Image (cartoon, rainbow, N blue to C red; front, side, top):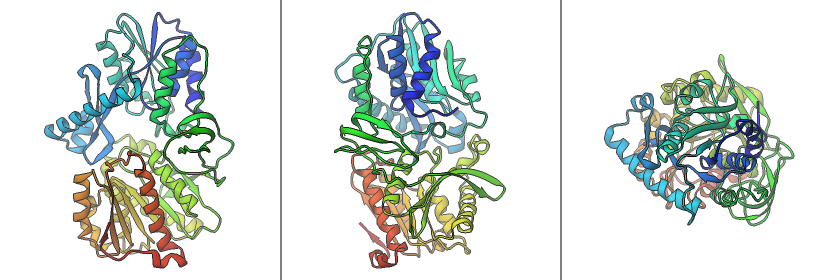
Length: 486
């Protein structure tokens, strides 16, 4: 079962929850993607809408991969398997939790404003998200609701893997799930439009949801603001007006936001990559006359549906470059957490995917790697038989490919956030091992995920310039001098 977008998923989910005839419900959405789904459920139940504050605890230097989650009332959930596999020590866990709790409080103030939290004591808490992958965040949310006095906890989601549902049925009194695919993969692959939900959209929906009986609707465009959204075709695009957004839909309206794409109308067909004996799902965009294609290697705990990589890919498409977003692991392989840390395996998949691209399209290939995916990209580029046109790393871990860095021949750009101090140190050390043309580009004030205003745009601009300088014949002079940092 696939959903058009979060609003459509919320309406279908609301139909199921309505049948439960709940007593005195309060709908609690998990930010950010769960809020548009929860809004539709709250409207159907004529119940107040609030946010439930839960935050993932990310593995240091690989924050896309969670080793646990925290919530209000001091709730803490740990995934012991990930802690062991990632070798996260007690001191590191404590440091990550301290930062996460500070961010949690900031997020609550941003979303709720001056409104107090909706009281849960003696009421039915209906916890809603746009989908569940591992279940750690949803589990923490259930415990937070109980700690705040909820008499009954209902967890409602459009989709989740069977393994996670079995665990969560021990946490919630009732679980409502519309779909549990056998080969789950990631949440985003079950949505046609999985554009990132912005903070302004979350705050607007929560403010409107605080008045549950007005019967009104809020339609948010892909641009953060007001307006209407539509998805007329497979092309990527964003809202018109002063605000822009990310994702496959087009929208009209006003507002502010960050992202890329202007409705290029380029096809974004789904493909199946033949990586040796393994078949991997992907999305391939090839603008007319493109000089090459950029293969994306995502980081641990992410997938081809990463909104950050999708945003960068859209910007590269606008610059006339082809892109391939694909999953490095099959759904079964991704269930084994050891695989997501196996840089050698990921590099091999990237190498086999490159060979598939060359067979199918005979275009020069570049790599864009994020987090641990950057190490896989560099290891693949170091293979003697590989002729990669250029490599870009976003917040990467090139140090994990330290033994192969001197063998990389492709021009390499290492993009790091200025506030991501430890990763910046690791990138500078790794750059000293490179013998190819390279540059370390620092985005001032940016943290590891480049979530700050303008940070991701800076990444896309740097990447487009680097790839174009090494792909377009007329752009050869744009290439930087070896060893330059800026």
